[in-house]
Amino acid sequence: MSSSAFPLRPSRRTFLSILGAPLAASLPGMPLPPIGAPRAAAGLAFTDITEPAGLSRALNVSGSPDKKQLLLEEMGCGVAFFDYDHDGWLDIFLVNGSTLDTRSAAAPPTRFLFHNNRDGTFTDVTARSGLTRTGWGQACCVGDYDNDGFDDLFVTYFGGHALYHNNGNGTFTDVTAKAGLASSHGRWAAGCCFLDFDRDGHLDLFIASYVNFDPARAPRPGDSAYCRYNDIPVPCGPLGFAGGTNTLYRNRGDGTFADVSESSVIAEPRGPGSMVFVPNNWRATGSYGMGAASADFDNDGWPDIYVACDSAPSLLYRNNHDGTFREVAVPAGCALDENGIALSGMGVGVGDFDGDGWLDIVRTNFSEQVTTLYRNYGGAFTDASIRAGLGVNRKYLGFGVDFFDADNDGWVDVFIANGHVYTQIADRKLHLAYRQPKVLYRNLGNGRFEDVSAAAGAAVRAENVGRGCAVGDFDNDGDVDVIINNLDGPPTLLRNDSGGTNQWISIKCVGT
Image (cartoon, rainbow, N blue to C red; front, side, top):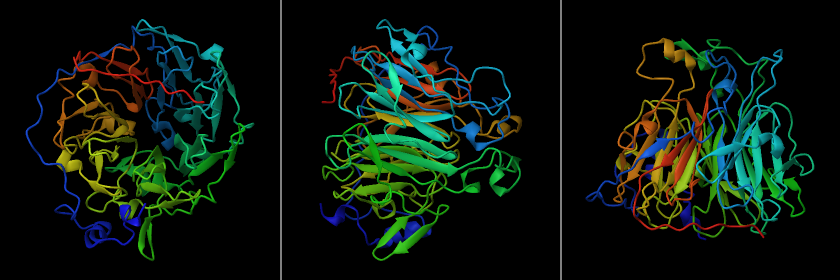
């Protein structure tokens, strides 16, 4: 691959973007899709079946539900659809949080694993599965790390993480220490993804690190400028703490992993959202990693890594094909917004929204910021958020996000789970709400999206404190459903009842 896919010498436009100047027309050689007549609207409809499906008792716990005092209490948890028993039906795994009250006699909350009963309902099999570890969970990712044909599970926690080996009989074994993945106390792991970065046939593991955090020493609401929002005392944001260091583990192929963060250049030092100039390259050095995704963004056949960063430039690690990466998000155009501003990135989704064969990126951000859509125009990106119609909902704080084809028309749509982080805003007459509706953007097939949340039904517009989300066809009817892990409450399972007549195909991949 030539270096032109990620230009290392910033153009005048990129230079101005970095300085914060507003951007105008498209870059030469990167035409956006023409805005033509949109396709006819489809009858999108989603139904909340959380209670009849048997999921309403899976309550998320994340500190105090009323007045949160610490950043840790606000973040929420991830969720995954995956077929852990290989019966052809997607099951559900929900990460859970914990409490700050160490004196409580109540049993600490655990994760939840629900078995798909193939009739629209689920059974809680957490206890017999062995997934009963407690702790303040964050995110999860699924992959068959040992190629035995059964999907394994990795969960990030505040203070560590866990690798659960799928035993193939409905149970899991915690093999974290045996696999060499134990981490030090106080480390706050956030997003994660499996990928085969060296193409040896064994899945490796990337972990995004958020901040270095000690609840006992953390400042309280109002203690500093980082602990106020619209002059309201709130839990201190990430810039009040030192950013963490991202980690890459290489799969040795024998059930163990080696930490190659240093040798791969993943773990370069990062300052508090700053940027530095090195010869022929603008490079973001911010940390505060949240969501993470791996994909081949430059079509060279090697997986790259994108990290959504909170209050800092996001990161794109380009795979150098030799076991190392180079962080190129700024010159590649996916670190900042179109005005050269680092937003508060939360979740990330990857998909080809314009059908040009290059994978694009959607990233959720804080309230009063737009959802960011980075269009891939050949290995580098342009911020197409406003032009594509994703700038209409600035009052929402987005977390979970994904591209998926909600109406089976061949064009990927965008789903976002929203919910604010500050319980304190509920007491003030602001234009923001703590509990927020979900958003569904329909792809019009002309480079633009339309907000169809209201038309998709009351279940989509229902207000929750949404966090992680996952998409998958849990009822095997050919359309894609959605599950959201809500903060301080039960999840929301949205069944896709759109009833389209378009064709579909389901492909099952099994590790060998």
